[in-house]
Image 1: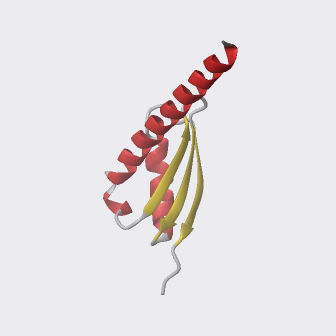
Image 2: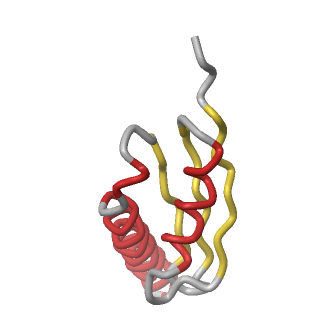
Length: 88
């Protein structure tokens, strides 16, 4: 049926998005200057859009994370919703 077909494609698309996000996350984990940062990755594998969220310890880390994410194959745009962790 058509409904189950769209259900399957939605599941496949979500799986592709998760895999794409995982590739970006792995790339961020390899960047030494991002140690201590808590960055979540949301990705759309079809459009190449990536949104970064979470917390960082220094302003530099946002730029570093955005640049590193942008170098991952398939990424066409990176939006940052990263916030600086409040210093206690």
